[in-house]
Length: 76
Length: 276
Image (cartoon, rainbow over all chains, first blue to last red; front, side, top):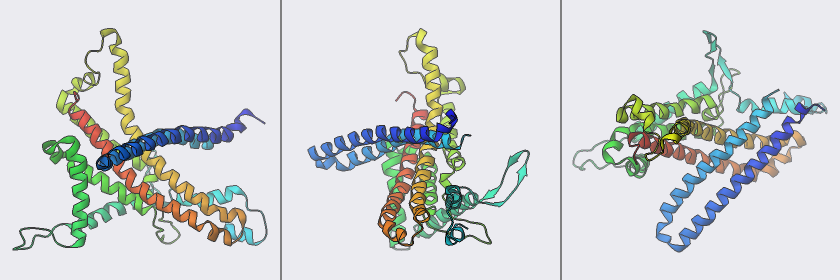
């Protein structure tokens, strides 16, 4: 088994690891957003807007890693 | 086709399933043009972005407020009010909030275009469109990195243009580095800031591309389970999951359009007023 045959395995492991970081980050974000809304329900709209925007950015970083993993599948 | 091979009781190789399913993701070429060593093929993605633009035009033409005499110019009608509520949301909550009214007035058309075009292109990917004469039309335009790179380059061009207009050709790059940086650290900070300037539209590209591609790959993988099992009831058993993922895709379509536009507004505002 050549070392290069392990590339799909590396892609799979890399994707899984990337999602761990993204999941923890967005989970923390959601936790503080819920707490902020619980403390002050009038700010729910503003908190929700900020939450969605920052969730999108964290996911963007996570998806950069996923794209690298996809590229690994298509490099010979 | 895959079903023929499976009907004869043979094993269907995974690569065949891959190719057949991913016809939804790979661009399907309708007409092939090669010019100056580059390929200028007309693919289904090309037709889809034209279709998305046409549909956005139609949406706004059908929804523009027709003034009626004696009404005081108040738009009437449910569709007009729908269009107006969306436009006012993007213009007031997003553009005017960040850029202020005078600057926002100049740039609102760009961001409105980006928002509605991306949303329409994302939504068109969720509709199974019939192809003509052996060419497939169904697909997501924004799941091609070329399309999202073109969209992000509109933001990049506006960022550079605004920076040049506000600080001059050289001043735009020197104003990237924050004030109060000691002289020995300045070259390193300059490199980092220039890299950060160009990574912002790149992140816009990859975020939209990967979100759209990933969502559709997940849906296709679920559909592909039918081929793996070979039984007809697998599709029925998976239907709730596929439905939920499809609904999530609806949310992601709108959300990614919102995030793209919002970040574009922030980047352009950062180029217009680098001291903020």
